Image (cartoon, rainbow, N blue to C red; front, top):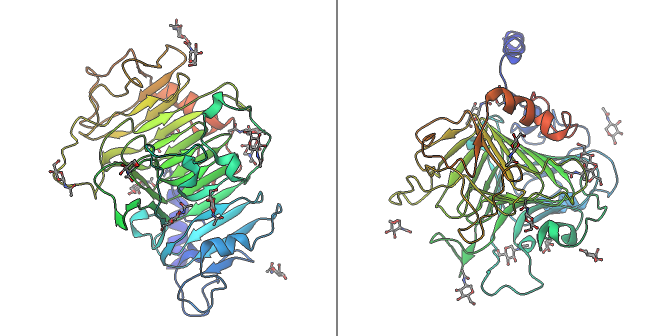
Length: 395
Ligand SMILES: *[C@@H]1O[C@H](CO)[C@@H](O)[C@H](O)[C@H]1NC(C)=O
Ligand SMILES: *[C@@H]1O[C@H](CO)[C@@H](O)[C@H](O)[C@H]1NC(C)=O
Ligand SMILES: *[C@@H]1O[C@H](CO)[C@@H](O)[C@H](O)[C@H]1NC(C)=O
Ligand SMILES: *[C@@H]1O[C@H](CO)[C@@H](O)[C@H](O)[C@H]1NC(C)=O
Ligand SMILES: *[C@@H]1O[C@H](CO)[C@@H](O)[C@H](O)[C@H]1NC(C)=O
Ligand SMILES: *[C@@H]1O[C@H](CO)[C@@H](O)[C@H](O)[C@H]1NC(C)=O
Ligand SMILES: *[C@@H]1O[C@H](CO)[C@@H](O)[C@H](O)[C@H]1NC(C)=O
Ligand SMILES: *[C@@H]1O[C@H](CO)[C@@H](O)[C@H](O)[C@H]1NC(C)=O
Ligand SMILES: *[C@@H]1O[C@H](CO)[C@@H](O)[C@H](O)[C@H]1NC(C)=O
Ligand SMILES: *[C@@H]1O[C@H](CO)[C@@H](O)[C@H](O)[C@H]1NC(C)=O
Ligand SMILES: *[C@@H]1O[C@H](CO)[C@@H](O)[C@H](O)[C@H]1NC(C)=O
Ligand SMILES: *[C@@H]1O[C@H](CO)[C@@H](O)[C@H](O)[C@H]1NC(C)=O
């Protein structure tokens, strides 16, 4: 039976675009004392309940690793982890969440969360969005600052993680006010994830908050496969390069754009800065206020600066999408310039794809062939990135 299944999977693998459970044997829950069977040699084990585990928090396991170039693995047992995790080391690190269904993020059993936000009304000069984050992959706080963005200080040659991978972990910033999760609207920037001066990829992970949920910043590159991003205002933002494949993009409310991106010629490396989505879904969040009518309100993106680039390919647009699609930053400061700002759709479908209402002075529509040649993972990163799990992403 096992042989038959293996053969069957091998036969269909060549025709399915996305498929994988690279660490499925390691992630599967097992009998007491045998949990590390099927895991890469040397895997550290974190659990709050299993006596076999050497660590009770994810951050303790991360901090135990040498700051060198060695490849390391951490398996995290099922449970709720109320902590902040910072990955500063350079060497490759893979964090796996325990699950018996690695290809289904709705079955994830590892929940990492913290509660913090930046109040933009009372924010002090020393406070930055980087100070209210659950998982940060960056060499230092300094390197992760959002600050004035690319028009600020020149880039420094900083090097964070060269190859960070995370599988099947749900990350939430449950911004709370007086101890109660704040669901009435935005508290201010409150991120689940920050990636700066690092390469990172995430497989069937989820990121939830309200404003500014997920950030890929200075000299940061990130690839997301499957999973979900949940938020309200500008909930995917940054000025690095972020690529999403088969990801659910869920709005708990509306505000700003789904994406707010900034590009710059001042960065190192090729001009790939932008947020790219393929084969994804723009929907109302399952846990949004049920009586809140979001129909026709969700702008796909707005330009944080005029070199913004946001590309939606083969993506399902539910009825929450604003008929005109992308928007200007604001009426008095539009920040949209032809051939400088790149807001693009290709192969959009669903009730929120309204070609006659789209605002073509802000965005353009390109053919699937052009999207494939210009905006595949390999085209965006100048070759298939060595730091991405090729079992999950083929092109
Ligand atoms: C894409 O994601 C959906 C929703 O999680 C999942 O049901 C589907 O299997 C995924 N498709 C592929 C090809 O992995
Ligand atoms: C696993 O790693 C340990 C320590 O790094 C080493 O002693 C052992 O030989 C390795 N085992 C295998 C099967 O590679
Ligand atoms: C984590 O959350 C606690 C409250 O649970 C908060 O006091 C702390 O500042 C947060 N840390 C970060 C880095 O966001
Ligand atoms: C993680 O980084 C944040 C921002 O620099 C900092 O406030 C926090 O203390 C760090 N937490 C840990 C666990 O290192
Ligand atoms: C932080 O970055 C600034 C430039 O943005 C630099 O002047 C400063 O030396 C850095 N601080 C540290 C501790 O690296
Ligand atoms: C990220 O990967 C690219 C190649 O895709 C490499 O040039 C760059 O140095 C890597 N970044 C880090 C911080 O290792
Ligand atoms: C933000 O700060 C302002 C001014 O101090 C205060 O009135 C407001 O309640 C704060 N908002 C939140 C969500 O903490
Ligand atoms: C980050 O900087 C390195 C050089 O320091 C460069 O090789 C790489 O392409 C840059 N990555 C991005 C996304 O800009
Ligand atoms: C849900 O939305 C409705 C309609 O906008 C509003 O009246 C109600 O107060 C909201 N409920 C919560 C719990 O925010
Ligand atoms: C883009 O914005 C920058 C800074 O706001 C401005 O200097 C530049 O002229 C703008 N680009 C174009 C093409 O107008
Ligand atoms: C934008 O670029 C296209 C071709 O790349 C060119 O045909 C068009 O004239 C350009 N538009 C402007 C306003 O520069
Ligand atoms: C988008 O996803 C589809 C289906 O998985 C795939 O065939 C196509 O090549 C992808 N497009 C790009 C631009 O990567």
